[in-house]
Image (cartoon, rainbow, N blue to C red; front, top):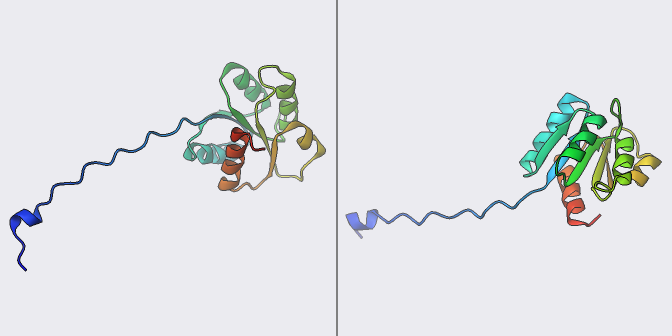
Length: 142
C-alpha cells in the first residue's frame, strides 16, 4: 500500500487547553535556619502554595498581622519567639485564632504542641508529609 502526500500531511490536533490552576492558599513559614527555610519554601511553592517566609517568630507574628495568611508552618525552636509561643499568640488573637498551624521540631512531641498547634511533624520532614498535612488542615480534616 502506497502513501500519498495528502496522507503524510495530517492536520495538527487542536491545542489542548490546560485547566486553570486552582487558587492555592498562602502559607506563612517561620524557620530560623536559612537552609531549612529555603527547603520548606521550595516544597511549598512546588505544591502550589504562595509562601511568606519569616526568619523567627517575631517576623512571623508581624507577617500574620499584616498579610492574608491561610495556614502557618513553624519551627518549634527559634530565637526571640519560638513556635509554641507563636501558636499561643495566634490562639489568643481574634483575627488569627482559627489559623491552622503545623509545628515542626527535631525533638519529640511536647505537651505544648498538642495544646497549641493543629498538627505536629518531626524533622526531618518528607515533602509529601508536609504537603498532605497542610492539605488536610486547609480542607478542615484535622
